[in-house]
Each structure stands twice: as structure tokens, then as C-alpha cells.
Length: 255
Ligand SMILES: NC(=O)C1=CN([C@@H]2O[C@H](COP(=O)(O)OP(=O)(O)OC[C@H]3O[C@@H](n4cnc5c(N)ncnc54)[C@H](OP(=O)(O)O)[C@@H]3O)[C@@H](O)[C@H]2O)C=CC1
Ligand SMILES: O=C(O)C1=N[C@H](C(=O)O)C[C@H](O)C1
Image (cartoon, rainbow, N blue to C red; front, top):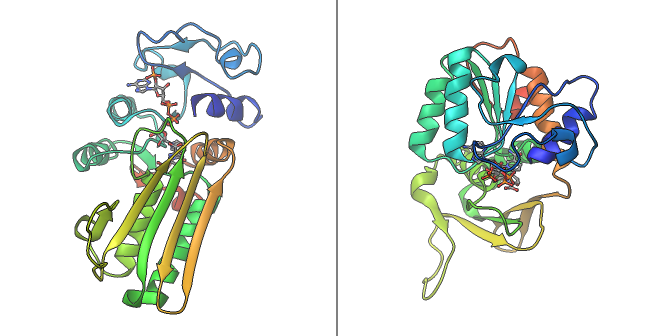
């Protein structure tokens, strides 16, 4: 995503690439960001220290790993910089630490920055309310072989939206994968299935299966630029907002 984000910023006249950060010790340090993204020289060298580069940007866009994102959010909170977070896989405790950072800055957290997925979240809420407890609900997601968290943040958010609409607690009604002698499917659960293969960008299907009919709400991303463009939309929206946690539905006016 780092390269996709550099490309999106460099190609959009409404934005200027202020700084690009990598992990300290990364072999990318010192390299030109534009060259890394295959765009030619852009004059911004990759640096390793967010704290000392804080004056170089207005909004931080972070797609890394939960541990890194937490540190970056805390640094942004200390310096009053808004942050747009695409990272997924936070534990409940890490999520609370993000809430703490958001007491000082506007913090946007979205497991999926695409317009299509955020539209699907709305459709899912409606489908869950209409179909109710009479259907079996399964969330199926597929991603590339490099993805390190499962189920995807998007799948979990889809499950949460459906569970909330049905008055269920996702913590207690989720079933992750199945194997062996499972017995018949209990009522009231939400199942999650994960596929990791090749270069799949990101695919999500929520199945509402009843007796005699089935509704499926599906989204397929075919380019990571979709996520990068969504992140830029969020970055344009967030400056000047009051401190707090926002998501893409706020940016898109769907909240
Ligand atoms: N919200 C959305 O729309 C989307 C979210 N994502 C999420 O974004 C995250 C990143 O995905 P992706 O780009 O595919 O993953 P990659 O593993 O390709 O990239 C993550 C990058 O973050 C860097 N990184 C990790 N920890 C730190 C740190 N502490 N400080 C600085 N840099 C760090 C890694 O550096 P190094 O290589 O040195 O470890 C790596 O370059 C995932 O959580 C993914 O689920 C992805 C796509 C869309
Ligand atoms: O890791 C990815 O690639 C993606 N991660 C996000 C997630 O976990 O939901 C969003 C997107 O599907 C791509």
C-alpha cells in the first residue's frame, strides 16, 4: 500500500507528498519515494523518524502493522497531527489505545477505504434488518498470499454491522472456520471463512441463506489504487475536524 499511496499522492495536484516514512533500519531509508513507486524522481527521500519529520506533513496516512500504527498515532497525538489509518488486525487493547490518542486529534480508522465496501456496509445493515434471524449468515473473504491477519478487517466490520443490526454480540456469535465433525449449524451464529491465495486484491461476500432463497452482497477490489484514493479522500476531509474517531462512512456522508 505504501507504493500505491505514493503514486496516488504524486499524481493528484490537490496533494503534496510531504514525507515518506519506513521502519528504522529499513533498506528503503534514503531512497527517493517516487523512484520506489516506479514514478521517477520526486525529491522526497524515505526517512525513519516520524518525530523529527513531523513538521513536513499536515496529515499522516498509515498502512503498516498495529504496533507501528499505535506508535505513530501517539506521536501524531503529541504533535496535533490528524491521522488516517488503514491498518487492520488491532486487538481490543490496541483499539483502546487508539481511542486514547483520538482524545487529542481527529483519527480516522477504516479497515477498507473503498467507496464500494462502505456502500456494502449500508446494504448489509438493511439486509440484516429485513432478513432477520430467519437466515444463516456467512462472511467469506479472499486476499493475496502476503496478508498477515485473518479474517480481514473488512470481514470483521461486515460481521459487526450485521450483528449490531440483529442485536447480537459478534464476540459471542462469531464462528471462525470449520473442521471435522462440526454437527449441524447452530442458529444465531455468524460464520467467517478465509481464503489466502496468489495476488487476490480483496474480495468479500456476505451470504444470507434461507430456505428456498439466498441473498449475497459481494465486493471485489481489482486494484489497490482504490484503497489509496479512498485514503486521500479521507486525508482531504480530516483536517480541522474535532478530536475523535471517524471512519469512511463519515467521509462519504453515509454515517
Ligand atoms: N483500509 C484499507 O483500505 C486497506 C488496509 N490494508 C491494511 O494495511 C496494512 C498494510 O498492508 P500492506 O501494505 O499490504 O502490507 P505490507 O506488509 O506490504 O506493508 C506494510 C508496511 O508497513 C511497514 N511497517 C510495519 N511496521 C512498521 C513500523 N513500526 N514502522 C514503520 N513501518 C512499518 C512494513 O515495513 P517492513 O517491510 O520493513 O516490515 C511494510 O513496508 C494491513 O494491515 C492491511 O490489512 C491494506 C489494504 C487496504
Ligand atoms: O491486506 C489487504 O490487502 C487488505 N486489507 C484490508 C482488510 O483487512 O480488510 C482491506 C482490503 O481488503 C485489502
